[in-house]
Image 1 (tube, rainbow, N blue to C red):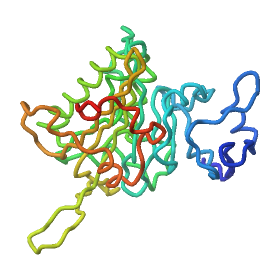
Image 2 (image 1 turned 30 degrees about the horizontal axis):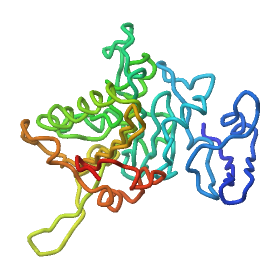
Image 3 (image 1 turned 90 degrees about the horizontal axis):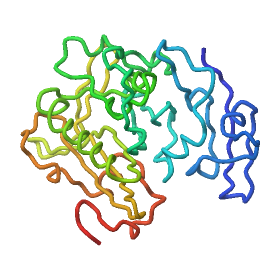
Image 4 (image 1 turned 90 degrees about the vertical axis):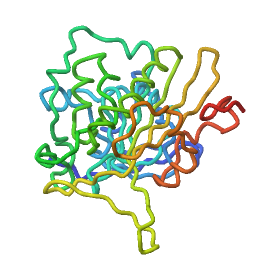
Length: 310
């Protein structure tokens, strides 16, 4: 059942002093010593619906008894939120959900050598794709939407990134973290190679921040006009993205930052294609997606962007 209360949040950045109304949200963001702290990147004035913030969900599908610790959300979103539409937090990732297209706008992860460690008791076979019941039934996708379609249920926050606990792994199987992806040659091909590459980078660096999401890009048609066209599947008309992006920020052991940004078309791709072929300028992704990424990091702080030293 959805609560209707809306809580205004006023940032200390704009007013010099932070004000939070509503005891439930205060408990969520306050540390033990009850000194108020603010999640990084909140705008000066924002109305956040309590249900839209989201809470972690246990393997059984029930909400956990406590909300994700504020310091984990702060770690993941260290360099700012791309937007605040339907933001939801889980044990190990944060997302913004697009209710019209039944896909995420974006999904954020923070990977380190420590949180990529495998718990041997964690078993992917125990995880099942399921509806995200924290989203109103009008706006969520279902397993039935994918039946008799040529598309895989493609993770945005990759399941293999979250084997630190069974619950963290299970949460990646919510359909809110899934998009329709071409299987052979994409989800089970080059896109999977990109996910493996990101994990390899994360195991050899201090911090890696990953933002992943769908794109719906325009194309020139035979009549000379440019259209944004995409397929929808199932009774809920789940949008099939034309492309997907993945942007990673790498912080090495000495505190240097590197940025890599990729866009791949949602189609079968040659398996031997070098990943660097899919480098895209970050500003082109931002313009297409409609939000800024890692805007808390001045661009001159990156010692390398898409493989080019600065």
